[in-house]
Image (cartoon, rainbow, N blue to C red; front, side):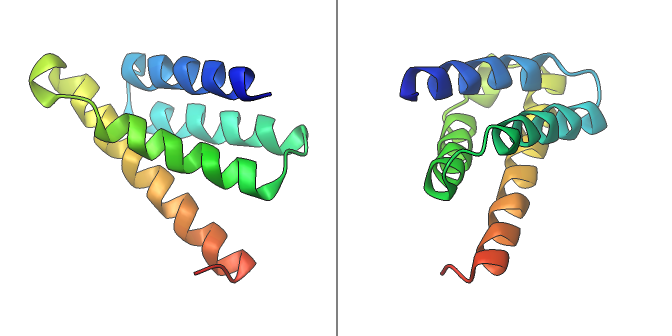
Length: 94
């Protein structure tokens, strides 16, 4: 399962970078997370996926990306942080 999650993260990163709009960035993220939910993965795997996506996005160098790609990275990071925050509220995690 871990290889599949790594592959999914890599695919999602590519989709984020190639998105044309900020709205499409959020859409591809939401679709990927909905897909994970449909497969009923454990909550700790789901939250780990989000944490790893945030870490992946943090590793990008702004000087090596176009303006649009860098904007997409920032939007994606904010969207993942918002989702992570909402999950902590829903589950009562700290």
